[in-house]
Image (cartoon, rainbow, N blue to C red; front, top):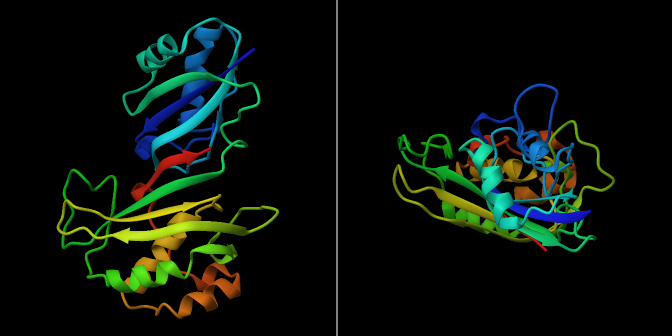
Length: 247
């Protein structure tokens, strides 16, 4: 059995997320279905992260086993030949048997994109959160620094999730300002792992802070509360991009 690693991009707008589900089209399901005629039998694909419905990826990573002798370049062409245009395999390679897309990862980098202008360009509305009210970007940057480090992020965990620990390490968190309807303001966050909806909840909370709802000093109380209801809103899925998986 050979162990194959692929890197892929996808526009998550019309999908139910990464994970195969009983209803709706998933990225995992599309890949597994596309691999059946290549391998001649069912193939289980493991992703580095289970992006939610509507979330996009610039460099998602997946691994799976194949017995067939197809080479990586031909595999890439074969998959792109049957996958929808919203999903593209950008690279494929054979890796060591012990490599796993999820369990070998040491961290991930995400971007959250906001258009802070009176209106949003029609070419960006599917990929950004439109926030028309002015934001205090300096305040958001200052507050972001308070979330860097090893923290208990239970207050930023989405409901319906069960994990052994809600402690995570955020290595970096910053905002790059954009101006106008077609230049997003981008939050980039890197860490060793993220809870369900954690990035979107952090983005929503910091936008609320930038709108004047809170001060940076309120973040400590939000973290200490470990209560999702104390933090800000969940930013829409369409503005979130998985940028890179770290190994």
